[in-house]
Length: 79
Image 1 (spheres, rainbow, N blue to C red):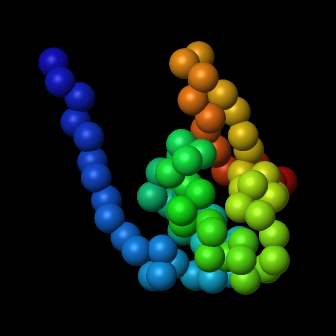
Image 2: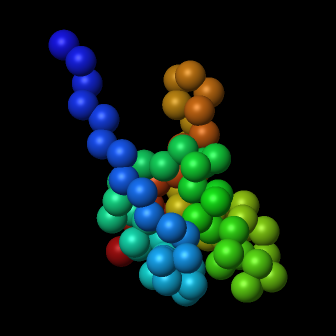
């Protein structure tokens, strides 16, 4: 059988500028992002805060690498 792929478009300008709210919205769309695909949605917030996209992603997400070497970002679990 073939897998069903859902494609959703939204402009980064429609996301909240506040990083916590932006990441919450992004992780509502999918709970696992490819690092390179997430970067474009984080650039605007990072620039506004004067930090790099990597710094922001590490603050709000958990980085991992799958068995194919793909860098993934998942939400941090906060108690």
